[in-house]
Length: 180
Image (cartoon, rainbow, N blue to C red):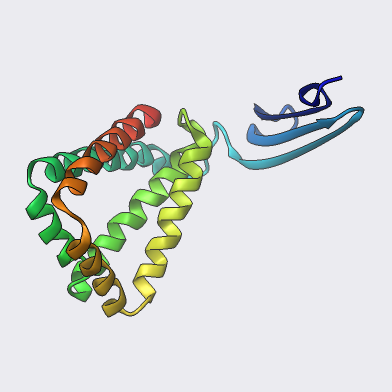
């Protein structure tokens, strides 16, 4: 018996047959005759209690994707202006609050859209990361966030800004594709 046959790990996503239609994610590990199944219920698949929020999450996810595409184009076309804009990140409390508020909305939209998207695990993880990092950036001292943005703006060469711009465009297209 080979090692691959001996240890088999698979992930599954299915709907529950009992009770409300919950989407579950599970990890199934088989080691010889021993089989371990871990199933985590997430949220209702069809009957969302906040249907309006769930529908708006499509708009939020698509808006996030478009923002990433436009930002990637801006970085490719005007890298000097992109670095100047990065320097202004968290320059004032108002700019920081608006920036983090929009990031928070984008993260919530990803989390709400996760179960209906083509990539639920990625939407869920990315959404929660964005939500939590936005909260952290709202509570840390503003001078730390501003200094960090300026540090990167001073060190990123123009070539690097142009080189990473296609990643932003591809991520934006991926978010739009997976959300609709």
